[in-house]
Structure formats: C-alpha cells, structure tokens
Amino acid sequence: MTDDNGGQNMVIERSLEAPTDLVWKMWTEPEHFAAWYGPGGATIPVATMDVRVGGIRLLCMEMTTPDGTMQMWFTGEYLEVVENQRLVYTDSMSDEHGNVMSPEQLGMPEGHPTTTEVSVELEHVNGGTKMVLTHAGVPAESPGAAGWAMALDKLAARLDEAQRA
Amino acid sequence: MNSSVASAAKEDRLDETFAALANSTRRAILTRLTEGEANVNQLAEPFKLSLPAISKHLKVLEQAGLIVRGQRAQYRPCTLDAAPLEEVSTWAEQYRPIWEARFDRMDTYLQQLQQHRKTGSDDD
Image (tube, rainbow over all chains, first blue to last red):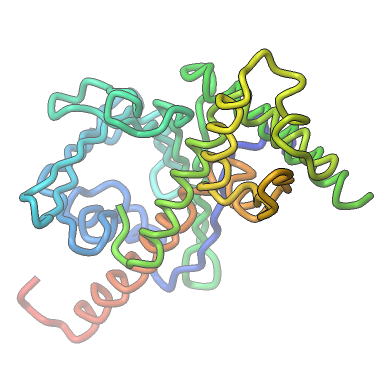
C-alpha cells in the first residue's frame, strides 16, 4: 500500500526453467505470445507488436461461444523496452482499429480503469529465469476508478480496525 | 476471459462485488456496518434517501455477498460479510487468477519448445 498507485498494484513472481532470451520472446514475438496469453479455448488471430518505446500493440482475442464467434480487442503502447530485462506497456480495451474504449462502453461495471500498465522484469537466475510481473492501474486516466479505489482502501482499513477491536 | 469454470465463477463474483462497491451510498453503508449490525432505519438515517431506496442498495449488497440480513421480519439487522472485500482489497487482484493461468500455460509451452529443441525435431 505504499506504492505510487495507492495500493493498486498486483505483483506475481515466477521462476521459469528457460533461458532469459527465450522468455523475452514469449512477450515480444506474436506467435509465441499467442501460444500462452489467451485463455484456453481462445485464439489470438491478430497480434501486432511494434516492440520499441512508443511502439503500438494491437491484440485480438477470439472465442467461440454457442452464439457464434466473439472478438475482443486490446491495444497499448510500449513505454520501456530493455531487451531480455524489462518491458513496460499499457493495456486498454479497444475496437479493431485500436481506438481505446472504456470498460463502461463495453458493458463492464463502472470502476474499472480504462488503461492499465503491465511491466515485466526478467532476471537470469541459476540457469533459468526469474520473472516479475506488475499489473497496475493508471489512475490519472480514470479519476472515477481512483476515487473509489481510495474509498475502498479506507473501508478496508476501517474493517481491519473493527476486526482487531 | 478464463477457461475453467471455477475461475469464471470467481470472476463473475468479483464483477458483482465491484459493481456493488461502485456506489458511494453502498460504500457508506458498508462503512457504517463495520461498527456493528444495523437495521434499515438506522442505515437510512445519515442519507437523504427513502427506505425503499436504501432497501434497493441493501439488496445489491446482499446479492454480492457483502452483507447478511437477519430473518426476523420486522427487524432485519444487516451485518457485514468481509470475505468478498478481501478479494478486491485492490482492484488489480482480480487480474491475478488470469495471469496465474497464463503463466501456467507459458511454463508448459516453454517446456514443449525446449523439449523440441533438445530432441532435434526438424519440423519447427
């Protein structure tokens, strides 16, 4: 709760038995990215990745449902690119042209930030790779989300106190 | 977004929790309930809202599993259930099961790729 995003970060650390350059490719080469990113049953028919600072990514996730084929589009920009070490990009839902759409426009409950930020850090450890993922909100672009997230933090703190009392 | 039924259900529940929390009156009600149980009249007091309006909010909170309401018809005290709140203590936590599943797939895929290289298959 002491980070820059007011406690809105999620961090996952993983150890992978694979060389760091191969793990880097998992994130930066569309055919590898598509192999693991989508949920089971989904395919990633379009993944454009211009992996350089300021470069754009565009991703289509396709799912077959009883009602037909459903497509979801995601876009973003690469903010930091340090080969085999660090990758930071933004992630937003969009249309097929990469125009950002708010979660509300897409029928999701209010309170989801429009843009989130994903950062990946890789480190060569014992012949394998330590991977640290941070998924963070970007409150500046979603004042509503930041507002209620702060209220929620307060509520959680209050709850802690109540339970300790 | 997620393959297994269990995580899909979990995400649905999170959606519901988020929707319930995305309202200042409902958050204020929850905050009041951290002090102890209260009935509809007591909960309505600080707000310029009618009892039916408050009841509507309580129904949303109840459906999201954030509060539990007593069964006595006249006095149905509400109590807080903190379990769903813990899951959304930060909104970003909702992405955790999604990423965990992705990394499981990445792990498997990496093993397959490397196995492929080791056995020297020529069809890659």
